[in-house]
Image (cartoon, rainbow, N blue to C red; front, top):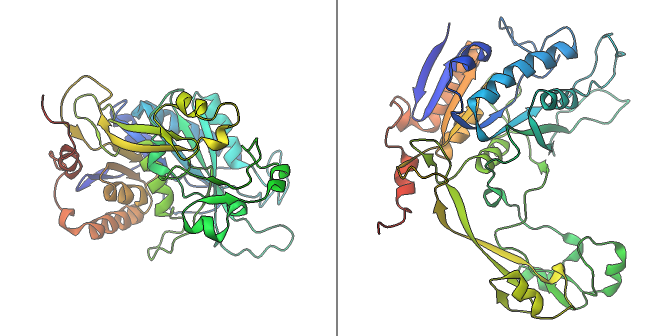
Length: 386
């Protein structure tokens, strides 16, 4: 038996995702951000729970079946982000010895690949404040993985929404750093294998794209304290990055769901001059230069539809089939996306409901808006009628 509650643009469903997902419309969700129960780590004391299967193979098989339904619900241009942690054999298992590292993220990733998913990235979530461990015969575990999966080879991914601050400390000097640049003053640095540098860079100032560098696949993010009785809450920053990369800030078409696309203008720099075309920048100094002297500046100029429907926009939809304490729905609401959270545990469902309601108390008992805040804000940036 399921129960559904609406809090603003969030829909929270109490029930087993294996029963709820088949009832959701196909191709209806833009992005999935979730963290399924890890293998053999926790007993949630709920009938039908995942994570306590007798073997790793059974756990993998259960999740492959769940994510087959997730793939049906996800749009062909959507992304699926799965946070998963490894575990150790605490007792003899077929094919394993006690204390063996089970390689569960890799097993799940390979099985999902075999089932038809594209595995686009293995992101390392590095924890600067990991949970202390009592073991003394191996290093303390201080990372988890986030798998980026897609339904197809081409999909929506907003790289500009998740750019990172530039950080190359080996280049910096106080003078250049104060100007917002990185500087390499010694030609001998050229012999140390610095990536991307192919010429003598003495007295050259390296400029960077002001919005930041492309997102890397190692995310150093601290765990977050949570007052509720949930022991594995994903940090909001992880969810924020996944949603911003996987959904359009401008929203999607109200008719067909196609996301609006960021429009950017690119400029190239060569010898203190900016050019709108890369070839012009290259010709400015002949054959002396290299890509090292062609920093790129990208600026957002607007948004455009990826369909021909010519109707209003609505918020993109984010799904978490293992909602837990509701972190995905919480962050989705803060980013003005719609959210669907499915949770098996009544206790965790209640934690999520209260958490989301307290985060936006004015929306707590309102039905989903037909004219959403995200749509109204987006309309402020709409192109004027011809």
